[in-house]
Amino acid sequence: MLRNITPRTQKDLFMTLRLSQLAPHAKTALVVISGIAAAITFYWQFHPWLTEKTNNPAFYGRWLSEYEYPNGPGRVNIRGVMEYLENGTFRYGGLMTVKLPDVKNQVIYRISSAGEWDGNDERVIIKLSDSKSALEMVETDKLKVSGAQYTKLMGEPPKFAEIPQGTPEHFQVHLIEPNRITLSVSDLDGNPVTFDMLRTPKRIL
Image (cartoon, rainbow, N blue to C red; front, side, top):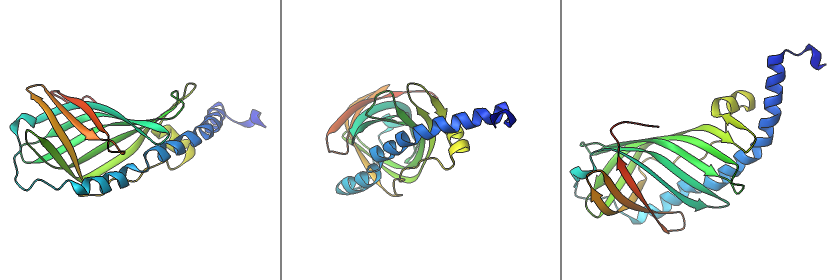
């Protein structure tokens, strides 16, 4: 029967079979990050929006950052570029990598968001007005599949809940230098995660 199938179709069938083996990993990734939106919405309601706009000029520009924290059975790594604009708005673009319990497996989402920001020498608060995500890549030790490939052969890709509009997120400021700002953010268990933002002249993701 396979003799009547074109090489292209055979390849697609083979990939579909391999991708079906990846589906449980993608579902596990959703379990790992499914609580992010709910936890952020709940936790940050106790950090009110700054009532007086300060907009410390030291934040203006684009900043590259990366941090990682445990979540459920895996870990979440977030790497991207934040742009703080002088009009009190921000734009963010980057990658969220969900590392599964088996360190050889990971699911990568491309994320983007925009909204308002306010900050001073002690803290920065951002408030989301828009947030989007798309499956970028699914990887194991034996296979690497793009989000487009996954969607073509398996249908609708796995999605996680978007963070609701208006959700604020709070960062503690520890250090401000011309080309480096050190911040900390609480993970989903309330433990601080400290990271550096490094000034970058352009988008690199």
